[in-house]
Amino acid sequence: MKISEQDYIALFQDVEQNQTTDTQSGYSETVFRYPAVLAEGQEIDIELRQGFLLQIANYQFHRPVSLALSECEHPLEFGFQLAGSGQTQYKSFHPGETIICGCGMAPSLLCEPAPDEQQQEVVVHIEPEVFKAFVGIHSDEIPSSMQHLFRRYDQKYFTRAGIITSQMQTALQQILQCPFEGLIKRMYLESKVLELMALQLQQGVEAESFPKPINGLEREIRDRVQQAKEILEKQLDHPPSELMLAELVGLSHYQLKQGFRKAFGVTPFQYLHQYRMEQARLLLSDGKKRVSEVAIAVGYSHFGQFAATFKRRFGITPSECLKGKKP
Image (cartoon, rainbow, N blue to C red; front, side):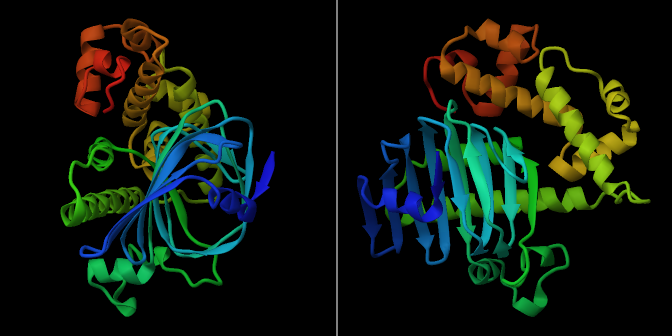
């Protein structure tokens, strides 16, 4: 089922909405139910202030859907994929991944979330002038490390993928479980969103600090790093060592680690660890496997080590997650 962006937006205009506005603090929150013809779930749009929007979406499509997104002028965007996967014609996306998009022109694309998976996303949209005001910089004072984020609207916008680190995961869960109301809620959410943005920007700075490949190998190394990532994801229960992984994809150990750092902000071992935990959380939340079965499925033979690692990552035990408690 292919649906245009205009028709998709129109479907939301006819669904149930609950809006909360605090005129004193300027805080506005709107909860949208997904159109029943398409999906089950909801999206929460939180306008922290004008030009600064936090979106929290949790949904599952009933059938395969291709969303045709039109070319548009794009603000700064910081996205976090907590659950669910899918693809566009440019890339696929998976649980535990992040994306940062600069301002500029976003090309038209088809987005296809996996219909048989629960999708959970946290996305921050912020207008460039609002971002500059928060950071305290003017257009002629943008640091070189951020200039790629501020392109003109006749230029294609910058994008970079990464992974959700443990620090990001903590901030995301604090946003999802925010206990406050009114002005305090806005202050709290703003602080956590700014923390996420800083962590994501720093991940990019660290990735770019590694030397770039020479002699035209950039694309080839990127493709081989992607191949290595897919090998790790498919062999969670018995992954190769970093040295063996590098050999499998035809890279040196240094090139593999450098390529992972640049692409995802972490080493292959760190990526494997975080991907294992995200998959464990999804399997436990699904409720169809016992804790011991999940531990084995993601590559842990020692259940005590698995439980301790899971609790450090999410703040709850695997048994509590299996029973429905949210991280």
